[in-house]
Amino acid sequence: MIFEIEIKTKKGFVDPQGKHTSSDIASIGIKDISSVEYIAVYRLDGNINRKDAEFIGKELLSDKITEDFAVKEYEDLKKKKIEKNSIEVWFKHGVTDTVSESVVKAIKDLGIKEDVIVKTGKKYRLTGKNIDENKLRKIATGLLANTLIQEYLIK
Amino acid sequence: MKKAKVIIIRTAGTNCDYELKTAFELCGANVDRVHINELISNKNKILSYDVLAVPGGFSYGDDIASGKILSNEIKNKLGDNVKKFALSGKPIIGICNGFQVLVKMGLLPKPKDFEQISTLSYNDSNKFECRWVYLKTEKINGNTSCLWTRNLPDVISLPVAHGEGKFVADKKILNEIEKNNQVVFRYCDKSGNKTEYPQDPNGSLNAIAGICNDKGNVFGLMPHPERYVYALQHPAREGFDGFYGWGKQIFQNAIDYLED
Image 1 (cartoon, chains in turn orange, blue):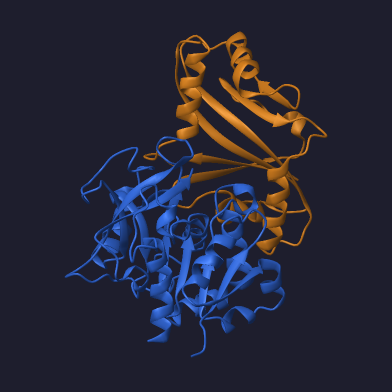
Image 2 (spheres, rainbow over the protein chains, first blue to last red; image 1 turned 90 degrees about the vertical axis):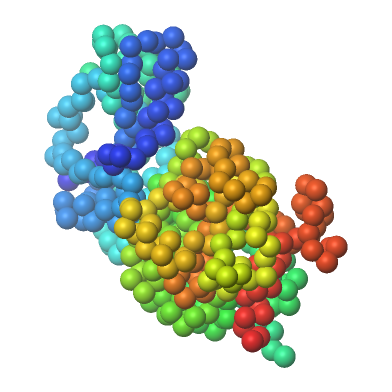
């Protein structure tokens, strides 16, 4: 089973990465984006169950004070639907993902013995007017993804 | 007299361990820098020391969040003995990344509960902030509640260097920390008054720069006292006894406490 654990800032706390990204989008000349929510995504692939994934999300990947986590479950990633008005950025296959290596170690430290393959990604949820595929692609390639080593997903 | 034994925990990404060792040695301690793996393979080793120090740096590359992976590792692999160490009243200090580790494993502000109830989040500027800042030493009738901050002037300056130093806790916890006099240092201006960015580098609630537990033996702070043990390290060469920096006094306090 594949789990994606999404980590986002709790309501009432500042989301500095989202805020920063929002002003960066304006600085590359794209108007009408009023806010951006930043979400860190961890994809876990291994012989673990939902309870394990929730435990990892709560104890390791999120900050209990300032962040919320949500667990999504996939039997087949091909069936995954990309959220409207969002951009996901992931490392391309074969590119070293150093954070994932740390997460694998930390999952073992939590006492989970099963081998888990981890990939890390970033998701940006955009709010604003006239958001279309062209605009999302421009933001993804101009700002959020280094297309030599990263791929981006938009709807 | 037997010298105090200090243990500095190091791991991948720790980078302030040598300065910290020098600071403690200057105060007359015997200091060992010990890798976390060595402590995990010999779990009781930690209890043979008098002082525990978690230094600054970027443990595990600050992956997930600053201090998160090391705090998770210490808590799950050495938690019982670290809690025992704290509750025994022996001095513990966490500096910068070390402070993040203590807070995220729940050793601060309440080691007895050993649950994370506060955090150090991204600076309001969303940038790495690196400069000298002024700190107000919190005192009640001239005394501090923390054994580490005795004999300090009302305002000292220390350097900060961090991207995630904003102290955050919910209102109830924050009130409790204030009521129990657990706030040790606050960012301030040169005269000890409330200040704002950039002298307050991160937007911490109540301008908190350092806290201790209710017994005053477990201490964590974002600024780096180990980078100011000699007056020469200060931009204006300020210090005491014409030679030392105020950071030294912090380490001296722990050693003197053990000798007392």
